[in-house]
Length: 195
Image (cartoon, rainbow, N blue to C red; front, side):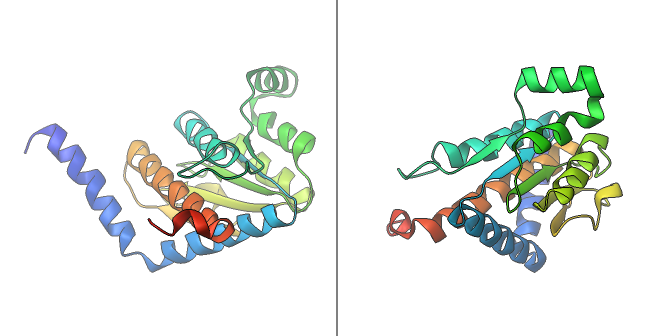
C-alpha cells in the first residue's frame, strides 16, 4: 500500500472507530445541548486553540456566525483569534495569557468556552480554562493523546484517538461539524426536513 492510501486508510479507520464510540455520541449530544441552551439564553460561545487547532476554532465559530448548511439567523460565536489582540496580549502579558485576556474581555457568566488542544498541555489553553471558570463560564474541551494536564478540568471533554496531531485535528473538526449540525437541528428543525 502506498503512503497516500495508507494515510487515507488511517483517517478513515479513525472516523469509523469514532462512529461506533458511544462516549463520543454522548459528548456530542451534551455539547450540542449546552451550546443550544447558551444561545437560547442569550449567551455566546468563545473558542480557541493553537496552530491548526486555532484554524479549527475559527472554522467552528464562523459556522455559527455565518451559516452551516441552510439559511438561518446568525448565532453568537467567535474565536479568540484577532491578530491585534493576540500580539498585544502576548507582548504585554506573555503568550500563555493571550486567550485568558480575551476571555476576561469578552466572556460573561453563562457563556461557553470551547478549547482545542491535541496535547492537553498548551499553557494558554490551561490559562483560558482557569479564567473561564473564574467568570462562571462553562468549558468544553477537545483533547488528544492522554488528555494531558487538562484531562478532567472541564464540564465536558473528549479525548480523541490518534497517534499524530494531524489525525487528532481531523477528528476534532469532524466532531465540531457534527456538534454544529446537532445544534442547528435543535434550533432550526425546519432546515433539516429534507436532509
